[in-house]
Length: 408
Ligand SMILES: Nc1nc2c(c(=O)[nH]1)N[C@H]1C(S)=C(S)[C@@H](COP(=O)(O)OP(=O)(O)OC[C@H]3O[C@@H](n4cnc5c(N)ncnc54)[C@H](O)[C@@H]3O)O[C@H]1N2
Ligand code: MOO
Image 1 (cartoon, rainbow, N blue to C red):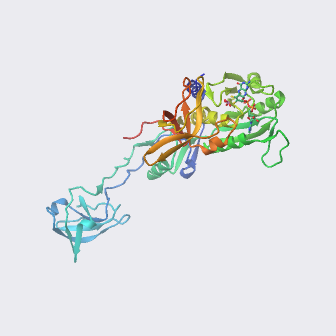
Image 2: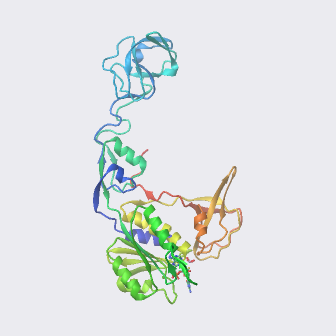
Image 3: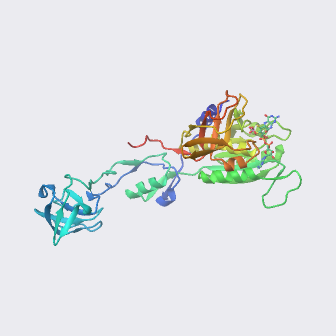
């Protein structure tokens, strides 16, 4: 199955969480909004100055060199309390409410002060340097709606309308464990043939980064009974992610036990690395059996699990950002599977290119750690010569798309 089809099938199989909770606004960062927030006030609340300078009626300053008497001051938070009349102006600061009788502000740099008067050396057009009430949001406007992933700018916009508590979806609970008799905790010694359990730490980290509530079920040995017990413990969460035991080896029991305890939706995706991925259902949970090779675990998480978890959380998976760059080196490839090589983007003066990292083995996790992008080679292509444009997908990506079209 091609990756794109696998992703579409997985995302379509996910039912987003509908339970909500109400949080104080600062706690809602990186959560998914579950309500429509409506502006209770205009933003800004009144016409106000966008420059430090002098406010006056345009009719009182017909030409450059007009002279007006300064009758007072308007500061942000301290409005000028009276009407500004004929031949008059006020000193006004950025953000101050425009007083009655004023329709124009001239920036200070275009004036000179002479005693109690100000001379306007360059008269601006009527209405200049005034921001109208409601320019950003008008009372009653829908500010943001359900499914919107809250980034810092969103928190600020919600604060600007005084939305101090907001309803968000509950965070998904995602259980994860590693499988393999060779795996040991990272704080102990290793006997011959043993390795540290690195995948579980990588999974914990990507789940935390995504804002999931991770449930760490540790390392599970290569036996049907141990796997069955772990699966039974994992049934009540929203999603389960495992690493290892999904290939065809003598100790690969994940598929068997999944078929027994739940159901297998599909197994194997036409990508390298990551081919033997398994997707299914386990009790209330969606199940992702990721291949044990560390790079395969990481690549399949990014390409298939992450968009599913975004949808589970009530969000919208963002379409991957991709572009092309010429490859600095020749790339070896056999036609068949879509390849996700690890690379580094080089933007060096006039030269933009992508450089594949040296070791592309699916056991070489340093290739992920050093890379800043995937080089995506289509299934049907063979070897690629240096200089050929190839598809690049940066690892730093917008993960959360937004449901509404961007505001013009
Ligand atoms: N005859 C075949 N053999 C294999 C095939 C195949 O199609 N036919 N596919 C290969 C591919 S591709 C992959 S990917 C792996 C995936 O196998 P498993 O998911 O069963 O993974 P394991 O065998 O359990 O482990 C593979 C490798 O990764 C190491 N590993 C496992 N878990 C961890 C962990 N938590 N931390 C660090 N490293 C881990 C493990 O020791 C193995 O070296 O199968 C190929 N074989
Ligand atoms: O898919 Mo495996 O992930 O090529 O090593």
